[in-house]
Every structure is written in structure tokens, then in C-alpha cells.
Length: 246
Image 1 (cartoon, rainbow, N blue to C red):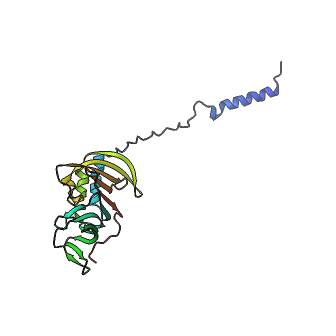
Image 2: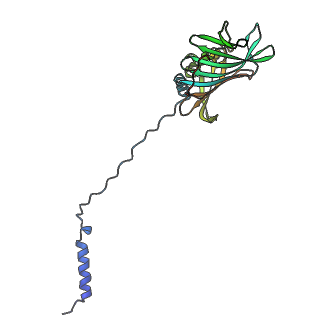
Image 3: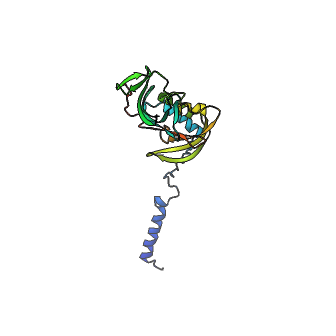
């Protein structure tokens, strides 16, 4: 009888043990991990130019305060035909809902004068250069700084007063990331922003720059047919500003 080598017997034992081990068993009860389905993310629709402008109008109404400049680009606008007094620019502060102060630059008899004006609920007050006291304005000054911030002023122009709005692109305005939108608006609608200089019946190009994060309007520019225009800048939004007579 032929003897089987011991080494062969050991190898056979190892093979049989491996075949019977739990890892090799076909009845392994270890659960198969299930794959968690990836959730479907619905992208947020990009607002249209008209929707952005509407948001800008609402954001302006929600402002607690702001500083502003209103610049006349081109020939000065005559405010008073009798005296020839003309407007060139205004810079001031707004406190919601209806308190505005501005330093207004006007031309009179070849001289540029700076006039301090307050538009308050109790009236319009102007600084008398002789007495250095504020007095109630006795005449229509031809410019109303408060009209810019009223609901039917710049907020209404932005929300519903600009026709055929188009997105121009993204631009940086004085360090603020903005969306630039262009369109056109009737002169009567733009009157509160232009010292009443523009009349109804004519559409004027309007450019608006809106803060991309807050939708607050940062800049508005109106262009006239001869290249002249109006530039309004808003900044220091919702900072601590109080508008009271000194």
C-alpha cells in the first residue's frame, strides 16, 4: 500500500478548513449595504430684470436711513426764471420716513452758492445766510429733496416706472457688487428725481445699479437727448443718521 506523504495530508487539511470557514460560506448573513439616493436639488430661478427693479423699489422703502447725492450732468437747470437761479447738485441725508437734509449748490448771478435746506414733516426750512438761522421757506424752491424718497418718487420709478428693462451685467460701484439694469422711463415719472425738469410724453434712458445682496439701489442715471443727465447715488444705508434742525 502506497503511503501518502505527510506534507500532502497537511495541505489537504488546510484546503478543507478554508472551504468550510464562515468567510467562504455561501450562506453568509452579512447584510449588503444599501446606497443612499442623492437628493435632487431644484435650482433657484434667476429674477428677471423687472423683478430685480421691483425688489429695489421695495428695498428702498424699507431703508431706515441713507446718504445721497444728486448731480446735474450738463447745463445747470434753471429753478427760478425771475432770478436765473439754477441747480447744479445736492448732497445730504435721509431719515425714514420723511426727514431729509441737503446742501444744495445753486448758481446765481455768476456765483455758486451753497444753501442748507431741511425737508421735515413740519415744513421746509432754509438757512438765512445773513442771520445764520433757519427760517421757513417762503417760496417754492424748485427742488424737493424729500420727493426722491417718497413712495411715489424713486421707489415707484424703480418698482413700476421703467419700461423694457434689460440686464446689462455685474459691475462694482464704489466697492459694492451690483447688477446693472437699463431701460427707459417717461419724463413725468422721473420728475421727482430731476427737480421737475423733465416733462411727460418723452421716454428717457435710465440705468440702475442694484446691490446684489440686498437689492438696495446704489445708483440711478437718467440721460437726456442732448447728452445731459442726472445722477443719484445712495450710500451709508441704514447707518445712524438723524435729521433735525441744528
